[in-house]
Image (cartoon, rainbow, N blue to C red):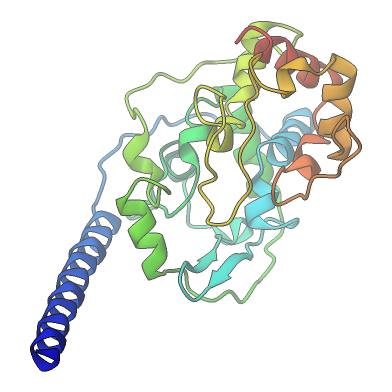
Length: 286
């Protein structure tokens, strides 16, 4: 009887392992196939300015849109995640893209597509798809003005856990799949304390706090719960002064300090007073 039970248990475990291996094989092939798909997106060929005010705006955009968080302070790329299960996530060296045309830059930033037409991995172009032509052109101008800073980076690799999380919708490996590529580009959103400008600023927040800004489960395994930014959450009860202080220092009104990896306050501290006030005004309409 015991031998029979052990035999049945062994067969069951063997079948289970076989099913899991087959399922992972399907998931891995799907990731490979999607990662090599070629997208024929006709990116808008915008004019790139060269004046000092545009370069200054471009530098500001690079700081408030999180470019430096992933691409490093010099924008020459970095390893921002390295884990045996999740993989090695490296960002491109933006100072070494001499072969990129203006359209290639627009296609990469706004559409999440490489020069060869394949999708960029983890590049949050879904957040940048709403960039105005003025801000996008200034950002490209600034990146192209930077001196080439060589950086020996390991190749990007997607680990097994990242592939499984992508299959279950917990992470988005290829944001290109979530973008409306036919969406028209706005010329400019006037930087003023208005709901419209606040909504424009808030697109950077949507990546973590969700498009409805209600927060929820963290996409990063082991990450903290993402807070609700609307009036129904704790953040919605903060005064404008408290909200400003949190974005500038990363310290909550109760005195607790947030880690930069949980809340990118090193980025939000670069927001101008108008940008913070507009963002606060917009969030208080939700």
